[in-house]
Amino acid sequence: MPTVLLADDHPVYRNGLRMMLASTGEVEVVGTAADGEEAVAQAMTLRPRVVVMDLQMPRLDGVQATQRIVETCPQTHVLVLTMHEDDESVFAAMLAGARGYLLKGADQTEILRAVAAVAGGEVIFGPALAGRVTRYFSRLAAVRSREQDPFPQLTAREREILDLIAAGLSNTRIAERLSLSPKTVRNNVSNVFAKLQVADRAQAIVRAREAGFGR
Image 1 (cartoon, rainbow, N blue to C red):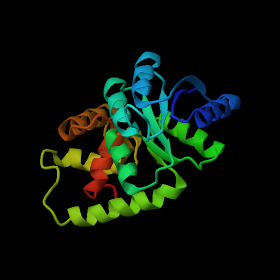
Image 2: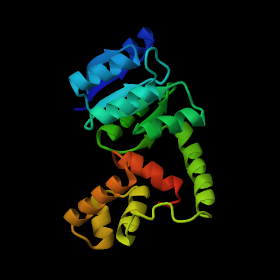
Image 3: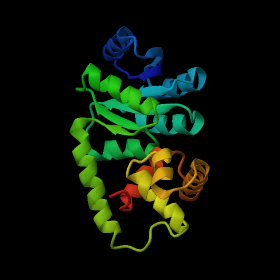
Image 4: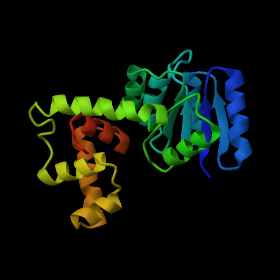
């Protein structure tokens, strides 16, 4: 059962979300936070699997809090749940390391599905955002395709693996697709992350799709 920390500066919404999630029996809410600083502190203390994060909060906004949590708590993943649906907010959160982004109009089923996906290491967008995200990356890919190789530091094999990561394949499926051992794939994925200077798979996907990979 995923452990969850809720970070939102509106007490009515925060408490309502806590009661809703707790009532399902599918997640364990281990704590709540009313601002970004508290969210970071609670994440470091409680080490939840998922932090459900609002973006607009006092003391430290959700994007900055997400970045700090990703840096200090590598086993904790962030799911943004906010009213902000503009492109700037969405991609700022993803580049900070968030693994998912939902709007506050999402229903219980959507939120639970997103929490489970993020807890499992997946990257997820709400239905209202998925199409826009795809179009955004498509536009960036068209621009980048006219530029020189964006990742000259990668070997041919690493570029091939990065392309499959960007397409959403797991390490197991990549190993099957390329007829490689799981250990070889893991080593190559680690090399890709190090060379791209990204913390995890979600950030690698963002970088790769911006460059036109995974299509």
